[in-house]
Amino acid sequence: MITIKIGGSVVENLHPSTIQDIKKVAESEGVILVHGGGKEVTKTCEMLGKEPKFVVSPSGIKSRYTDKETAEIFTMVMSGKINKTIVQMLQKNGVNAIGLSGVDGKVFMAERKDKLVIINEKGRKQMIDGGYTGKVTEVNGALLKMLLDNGYTPVVSPIALSKEFDLLNIDGDRAAANVAGAIKSDKILFLTNVDGLLMNDRLVQKLTNAEAKEIRPKVGFGMEKKILAATEALDMGVMEALIANGQRENPISSAISHQNCTVISK
Image 1 (cartoon, rainbow, N blue to C red):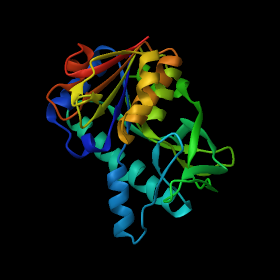
Image 2: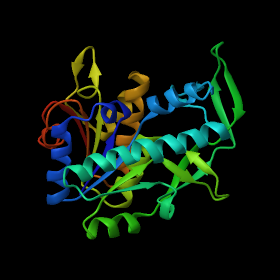
Image 3: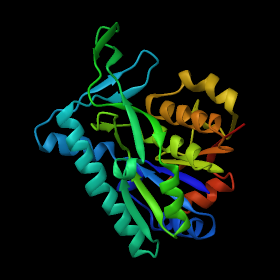
């Protein structure tokens, strides 16, 4: 069993060999896909006259600030346009995909953040309203397993329900880590637009979980989240986390065989 997180940049330029890779792995061991699409959300916000806002946490994590209107746009784009485009491509290539938002069947329950501590433009800590951003607290692994057992390939968008039944924006990488932990995936694969973790312009091929936790504060915004999600997945029992370039040919089978990627293991 493998959980795959497809980054938004990969979704925009999905290589035909990636679809074939998904089909091969889905038939042999089962796949769950969690997707991103932040750039498309930003583009739609701008088209609708809603200026996107991003914040940085004291630990250096950059994320989208989500007010109620942004949460509605996020849900529309992620669970509508992007999710169904991926399902359409998979169905066209013989993969019996089923598209879900994290809201459907309570795939993702999350805790709404009352307050956020951010670093403001002056470099100082500031507390702001938490908006409609959440942290995953529960995954309906039973539903996902039922779909897998019946021959479906779930494609899940990172939207969650709060206990008050609000729609919450959740981080896609960490959502995928929670899925992998809930369904006891052997591996989690993060497909992005680079070959893996690059340090001093060189690919870091192998890390232990402990080494990844130590190195995380030293890497850039986008990769930092993937390293965090990878270590969280390993802490939840996943045996191996892979970070690979989804724009290469056959990126899944290459990553599984430890080619052109970063491998993080216990």
